[in-house]
Image (cartoon, rainbow, N blue to C red; front, side, top):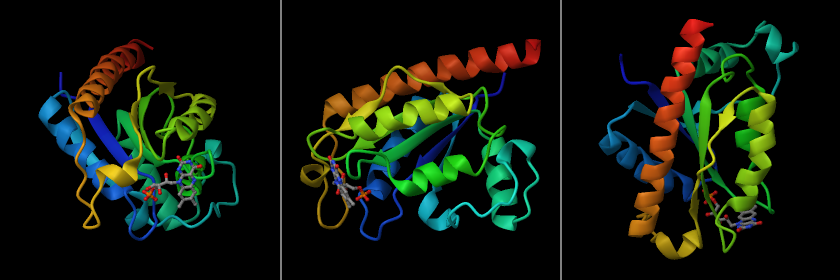
Length: 191
Ligand SMILES: Cc1cc2nc3c(=O)[nH]c(=O)nc-3n(C[C@H](O)[C@H](O)[C@H](O)COP(=O)(O)O)c2cc1C
């Protein structure tokens, strides 16, 4: 059986964001982990406008090319990791917008989170996203990666230096995701 395809989605679109460095670190860990083929997606370059489709996404009747491209991209994923900042005790708007665009493309696929922020380490953005992904029929992982006080782990040049505990926690999330990706693929073939 081919390795499942993992898409790591950088949620922050802000110039000077920490998200690019955190996403790059997680990408490197996922490639070394070796259970997936790995792709890094960046919402800043994907550049979706605020949801502007006239029909409910469950119908898949997309009229805009940006949505058709996003749909084709996400359809190719077997598992996802969202790299999300904490903004005002919640997730950032670009991440929610990217989720809202689609429906069946997300369904019955496992999803994990790498959250980062201040002392709460992105926990509140992840907690907010769990019911959102459940509503889309995704399976949220019990484990997450939580990066506290991101501003102390990142230099002005954007170099991110994680501690060994974060590398371990990234590996544990990837283990859980790969187990679910295989289980759901087998269940999908049986159904
Ligand atoms: C608009 C805004 C709101 C924020 N609110 C919170 C917050 O409620 N809790 C927190 O821990 N950090 C908060 N922060 C700090 C961010 O988590 C931190 O700056 C992080 O680097 C943002 O991610 P980004 O650089 O990838 O955009 C906030 C930052 C911004 C820009």
